[in-house]
Length: 81
Image (cartoon, rainbow, N blue to C red):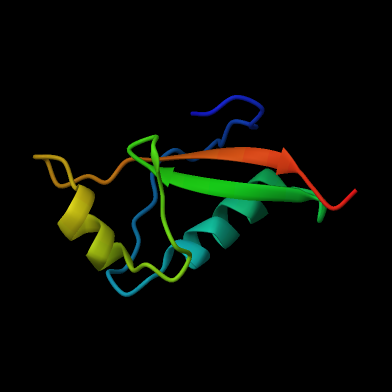
């Protein structure tokens, strides 16, 4: 995980292949209860910032490990004020 980020109580999410990173970002935002002034960035393999319109299917094809898992990390940044 990146610094300056709250820990999630739930560490694993099962997402449908057609789900987007945008959906995952919303799930994480709701779990963390972030203020509107906080931006959330989601990374794949701790270094690739991907588009919020990217689907889980696309990310799985490109970034899945040998065991079929796609690992995400996130960071929070205070913005808009």
